Length: 228
Image (cartoon, rainbow, N blue to C red):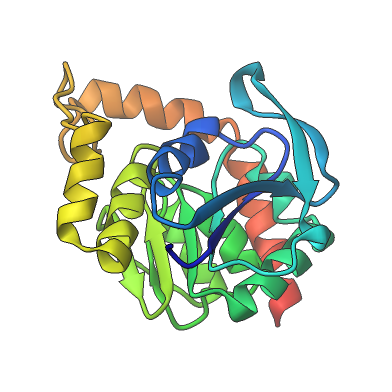
């Protein structure tokens, strides 16, 4: 029988659901895995787009985990200010075998003081903000520095999860899971990265992000100041 491998997804209101449901789909297939959705307050939690997750556990009630994953989303601004959330992430990360994030979840790890001196990645639009937390931004889709593994934007969560699975259960097992979920990306457009997207698509997308940039940059600045 496989040893228990508790996986905690540390959630918060207006998280991007695919940031954690993607890796959840992979990691739930790991032998011994126990996947736990938890937040600072527990109960029901509404994600970006209106999907509600019921029965979310309180992080304070989770004793330990082998892997903690912090997803991103438009709720990141408030999450970086939530001292209870950050404290519980720090507590669980202290004994976790893997400390991980997807997308702008890396900003929350940074606000918790877990990225200082580490290489890390995040969503391309916010990756440079990691330097405020003493991290070195890395453009790779999955970045590992010690026991910290960070994934890029949204869909990179699946890549990160398969990377971890290969280390724990072996390449063959991870490849079997990849085949089982038919993860064979063949997008209809070659515009999934800033360097690939047509210039006008990139400009339009950046303009939408500019609406939240001042608030997010201010939250990063406040969170970084608290660490010092």
